[in-house]
Image 1 (cartoon, one colour):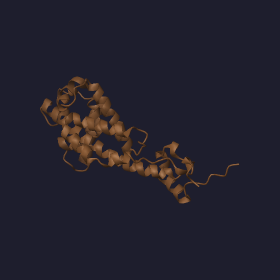
Image 2: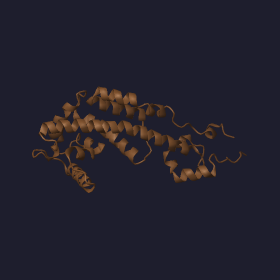
Image 3: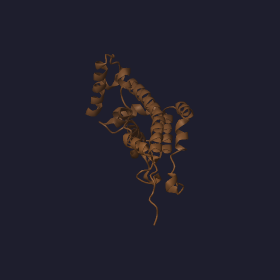
Length: 230
């Protein structure tokens, strides 16, 4: 008869796993048992990886905001382009703008066009690249000039950006991202930034040394599962 498997994690480590909800981040295939300590390794790795990925996505959001707002301001002849009389936005888009104005009012910040746009999330800018209320004509045609490195149609670019929006939301909501191809996500974000500015994409790529290192050091299978435990 085989011996009874010894717990991998100590009682204190099991308490940490429960309190940190670390089990949600672990790859089950790397665990030796229900009392494996590996979820703590996964939790730390996910925390650091999410931080590093967020930095890349933050740059993407800033680049999209600057590129899109500049093109729409020029096209509609006003910095608060969303108030242009000939522009029809969806209810959802208008609601997000109104919420930003209300927030700024509550904290006594002047609701300038710049301040309002800085309140917008990545999801807002990605929405403007969608179908919307004839956004193809109203928004994409003027916006497209802000992506000099892109030669395709609106749809594929929106799909790429929406995929990154989902990732950004997972990071913000502390969801597990380790099951994604994060190296591909990083390349996709840099590619999207490069459509606007190759020089900015190169700078972001060079500055981001953390994420590649983290992706190369994912938590390994528990030693006990590999047969190396006592």
